[in-house]
Length: 507
Image (cartoon, rainbow, N blue to C red; front, side, top):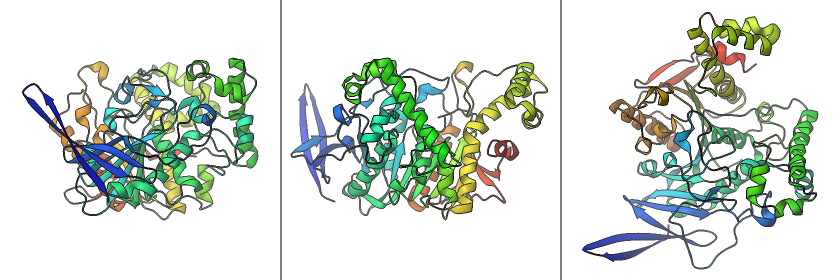
């Protein structure tokens, strides 16, 4: 591991400031980071050419070699998206800073110990944001505390929204894969290839890589677990409150998904008043974002995902990795519950002849019970059932182990208006030991829980098993015993709660 240390002195009135920079040689050229708290930190390393101009809506292109030394001491611009603003009642915790946004966003960050005796396991984090927003500069994604515990921590940007997912017939025609959209997933694969080729220079082991994601990031991880393009790029995968199925039972459905995605691209071009791909690429990012119809998200394109995630597992073609998966007690999409009578009416309208069956699982005998049922239904339908389904597929067709959790700590808030229970994204500062980045009245119990959760994640990254010295043993999950770890003020192993309710949405 060749590193060049440089020292800089800054002279200010009555003060000497001492700073160190570190230079590492990658396969494309040298990059300069900085040292802090016995860590070496590199922010904004390019892993692909800027996807602008003729490269807009194309697969990421490898960087050309450069001469000299690239300064990598601050975060790059976040992917182009709407200005950061809370889009859900729990979303303020993972808003990107009010920093630049740009289509030129394909950069990653590395945190590693200053002195590395032998190659360390690598943890690569993929942010959430509904595939419409997000970026690595969010404070809760800081890798410092994880890197201090002998892993190399990496976070990487990927395109979001219309820039990451727009499909169009002309885009499919010009592509060697005869498909379009899903550029965000290709960005992630390109970033993982960079890790494979370069992380040894930062003290990491390219053969001991774990990928982790939350929400949309976890959904992306589920795609990477099924994609042949990601084969061999990681050994373990962590999915926090997210997974996708993208079930296509036959080729006709796959074609329909492609046609639907391309139709959205045609509609966008029509609204922009353009007739060609060249004209689309000449439009400003601001105009495209403003006109965008809201399409964002992956689909089974026949290339990155040859058929679908479920089909890949059923055919035994998934990437065999260990899984650590779970969701939060209060993962849900709406903070407000309907009264019992309105809830029953909604269930009858939606589920028709199955309404009585649903109401047995999610009852509404009182307003309070109806409220609990709505939280449980939202949690299980949109989060739990998908991860439960992935666990079933992994056990049936995979070789790797599965470890499942339920995050149940009610995250403290200063006022009732900021108390959302164990809400969506609430687990992230705990898993990455970053409670200090969130303005909430955390207690000693929260600090201890963050220490335990981050240690579980560190152990899993290093060995593929979260259990370790000083921690409650976390058993592997199977469909017979269905043992999961409850992550709360008290760590506890239990049988999967509300399994019938979860199973209902996995049928």
